[in-house]
Structures are given as C-alpha cells and as structure tokens.
Length: 136
Length: 148
Image 1 (tube, rainbow over the protein chains, first blue to last red):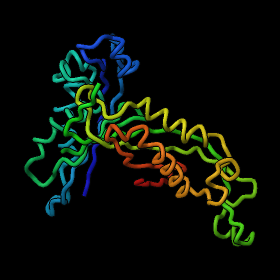
Image 2 (image 1 turned 90 degrees about the vertical axis):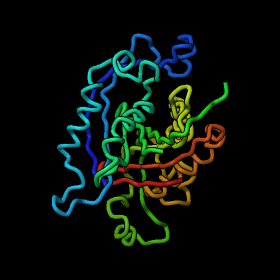
Image 3 (image 1 turned 90 degrees about the horizontal axis):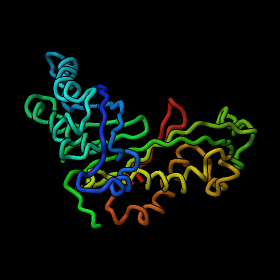
C-alpha cells in the first residue's frame, strides 16, 4: 500500500552554474538564470510504501510524517533563498530535479527501519511542472 | 559540449491544455444504436472538452546542469506536433487520424502517443531520454494513461 502526504513551501532560487557567464546560463536555464533570483510555491508529495500495522491499522502515522517533513524540508527551506541559505544549494544548482534528489536524501534515512519505506518524492515547481524521484 | 548523465533516474512531467470538439458516432450503427452506445457524446452537432495533457519524460539526470530535459525543447515538440494540430479543432473533421478512428479519449491518447513517439528519437533520442507516460484528462473526473 502507498500513502502520500503533501506539504507546501515557498522559496527563491537562481538556476546558474557559477563558472558560466550570465549569457551561457540564460541559454541553459532561460529566465530562471536571472541573478537576482525568483521564487516558487513548491508542493512536495511524499509517498511511503508498506503494509498497515495490524494493531494500529496504519502504514505510518501521517501526523508523524507531517512532523518529519516539516523538520527536514519545510522549516529549513520555507521562505528561504535556496542558493544562499540551504546547503547543498550553495554549490548544487537548485533545479527542481536536484531539489527532489535532496529531499530524497534527507528523508531516506528516516525510513530505513520500520514498516514504512520511502517510495517516491514528487516536487511541483508549478502546477504544470513536477519531478518524481523513487531512488536509484 | 558533451552531456554527462549521472546514475539518478528521474521523471519530469509537464502539463499542457487544449480545447477540441468531437462527436462519437459510428457509421456502422443505427441512430438509436449510436445513441445507446455513446449517449450524449453522440449529439449530432458535437461537443467539446478542455483536455489536460500530462507528458512524462524519464531518464538519468544531466550532472552539469542538474536538469533532466530542456523543458522549452519539450514544449516546442508538444506545441508543434500536438497542440498546434489539435487546439480549437474539430477532431472528427480536422485531424487526419480520426477520419477512420473514433475520437474517444482512449484513441486520442494513442494518437498523441504515436505522434510524440514519431518525433521523439530526433528530439531526445541522442540524450537517452524516454517518453515515459502520456496522461490525458478529458474532464476533471476521468483520465487515461498510456505507456507509449
């Protein structure tokens, strides 16, 4: 069974490779390369897999999942400038793809034991663009 | 510049919208049989939908840029091969595939998948990216998924 929790956070970022010129970065990232930055209302959907505990009827307590997501992702990233305030985005380009990988990296250790496993991370940059990562 | 892709496999989904008219009617069936089979969708003057299309690309991340796919290239492909051909059109009379094919959403998803598959190798084949899924929402209450 899969269970999914959705949270939101808003953050700003610049998509640019520091060693490249502004023109080179604009060719790769388009308007997202604007050095002053811009922001998104990100939506994160985290899916866990597992069988319900016969005693509780739950795969994982969704209240606890919300707390885990708040501690590991929302609190550190909400209303932050990712490049300046949220490692590793001081040296990793904060594309939506890299954001999904980073969220996976932060969450995966929390679900190594117990009956729930991290199954998928989905990050919506906008309503019309999202990235899924299910581990390697 | 050569493209180096990392071990991480990701999927990126982009949503597009188009509006089109259609009528579900089989010339092999009587008027009443058509009415019985297709219901309101058989209305002689046709009707339309605001279709929502979700295209999913899968592949390994490009290490240098942190991107899976250049979204503007994907947009261009979908605009050229799908949206420009279907948006604000009558599917039955203006889209060649539907001359001999019922424009149900199942068949529309198949047509979209086929068109994208045809152009895919030229656009993204060299980058090792695959067309992972085509999802077509006919309305907010029904949708159709196709693994091309």
